[in-house]
Length: 182
Image (cartoon, rainbow, N blue to C red; front, side, top):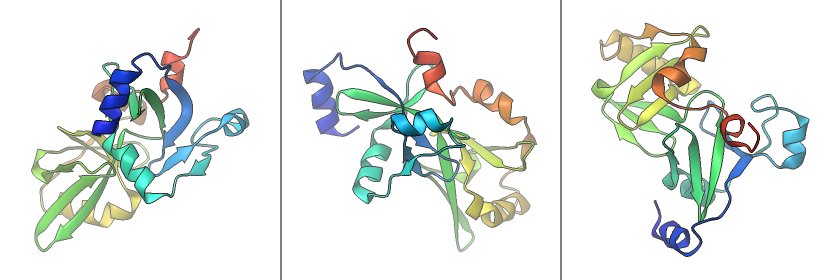
C-alpha cells in the first residue's frame, strides 16, 4: 500500500466505504460506475466508463487487496472503494520467454507457474489459484495456457463457476454483502 494512503488512513480513520462505483472485468480492466450507470443495470451487463489513465490504473493496482470476508477493495486514501468482480479478483497474464512461462496478475503479482492450481469452469474459462490470490486467465493468453497444459505445468480440474467464490474465498458483489439493510 502506498505511504500516502497509509498516512490518510491515520488522519481520517472513519471515512465511510464506497460501494458499487468500481468494477473489474474478466480482462483486467477497471470501470467507474456512477449512479446513472448503476441504475441502468448490473455489472457486467452494464460496465460503465473504462479507466484508461495509466497512473490511476497503477495506483489502484498497488492499493488493491481483500478484506477478511473476501471482498476486494481499492484503498483510496482513507476510503475503501469495494470492487465488483466479473469473474475473479485477479486476471492472470501469461508470457512464454523461451521455455519459461511467466505468470503475472493485472495488479502486478508475479507467481511461479508451478505454484498455481488450475480449474476450468463450464464456459471453458481457465482459472489459477496461487499464494497471491485466485484469478481468471486473460482470454488473449489461452494459447500460452494450452502450451502450459501440454508441457505438464497444469492439469486443470473442472469446477462450476458458481462454486468458485465460496471455494476460493472471494465475493463477486460486495454491495450485496456490505450495503446497509442487506
